[in-house]
Amino acid sequence: MLATFVIGLREGLEAALIVGIIAAFLKRNGHSLKSMWIGVFAAIGLSIAVGVILEIISVNLPQAQQEGMESIIGMVAVVMVTFMIVWMSKHARNMRKELESTATDALKQGSVFALAGMAFLAVLREGFETSVFLLAAFQSSVSPLTAGLGAVLGLLLAVCIGYGIYRGGVKLNLGKFFTVTGVFLVFVAAGLVMSSLRTAHEAGWITIGQDATLDLSWLAPAGSVQAALVTGVLGIPADPRVIEVLGWAMYLVPVLLFVLWPHSMRPGKRAYRVQFGIAAACAAVAITLIAAVPASAQPNVGDGTIAIIAADGSQLGTARLTGSAGDLALQTTVLEQTSTVALEASAATTSNHLGEDARTWSITTDVPVTSLPTTLTLAQLATLNGGRTPVGVSPVTNPGPFGAEWQATQTTQVWVVGDTLLDATNAAVTTLTLSGGGLSSTRTVTVSGGDTAPQSLSWAVATQQAEQNAAAISEAQSSAAEAALFKLYLPIVLLIAALVLCAFGARGLSEARRADRDASTRLGDDAGTSAAPDSAAPDSSQTPSDLTPAHSTHH
Image (cartoon, rainbow, N blue to C red):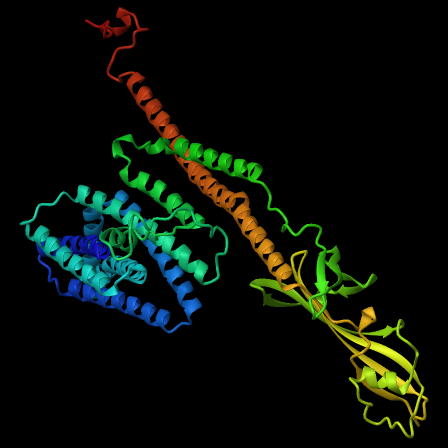
């Protein structure tokens, strides 16, 4: 409630001052205020409509997209409130003069629409800022009802103060007012940065920098007054994460210094020196981070060889990945027999397995089985078929023995994250092709008794082993994300800031040199003027006789 109250008060008073300045100017010049009020109410209506439309759009979106919409609205609000603070700091002293100049131009045109448009645009900027900022505050507040009440009270107080200033009955030190409220809004906007980064993560846009930093639940217990202040007003969650703290600090410190830095100590036209200095510091920090932060480590899964087991839990062998990222293969050793299945990149799909986004292969191959007998008796055939004679084989007409040709159809599923084997399974189905033994033609049957051959065995990675792999991969990914935050993304932000500051510094340096040249030119002109001879003064090179008028020789 306090945050929205101050937002409503600050933004409302700015709009009230603008309206008051325009109204006083028109009244002083004997013009009606009707056209001004047309523009004011039109701007208010459009500002409210913008807020309502944005809220309707946000509410009707799916959950993840709602979080993304809240992130966008929050960041737009931060940009707008920052622009408002900077603009007010630079133009507050000349705001009356600028508005009166605009009103004068509108009056010269003699158009009601021009005057209404001037008031409309002046108030619309404040209205848009208020709508977006309040909407972002509502979305991050604990109680939207109390937040709305705070905004209404702030706006009403702003109208009363603005009217009092217009009538002359209220004296307010606007410089101190805008400084104090500006500081408060900087903290609120910094909290919105944290909220926007949190919702961006929930929307799936930001996945780095999610490690916890500190637990503030002791400072602001849920439901307490402290929680209402820290979380509800300042937007600081009880469990801030790394990227949120970085965003909060990187916004708060420079903007707060800008607001609080005394005007008497600001560098003026030599500001380019400060800008170049800060740019050099940003670049130095970025280079230090790139050089000092260690690169991310690979998942701790040993040499990548993992055990594979049968359905009864007995170990059958091992499995491991071979090759490089673009040319992987699964190498398995089952009952001391090694085989390899190529994992072509074009055949991979993506799925979530054991909580990890993994590349997935499902490969079916037919493998001949050469280690099983090539001749079977009728009794052996019944044993392979689960104790029953296969359908189509008669003990009377097909007494055996039979010629046997074995084949296993293997369906291998593999899950890989990066270059690390996460999990794998193999389902084998053994088929037996019979001939002779009284059969008029070959007959193919599916059997379950050929499990003594390595090709006929179904296997899987032990569940515990796969879960350990997933945990190791998750830890490595988290470490990689943290390393990327400090080794890549933060240096990029600092280098961009350095380039922007260098651009402003170069412009300031150019303007300072131009000003110095102009000052030198004016100084030279003044010196030349003061040194020029007076046309009425006598020439010091002339003699007294030369200065004496000539006398006539005639008497």
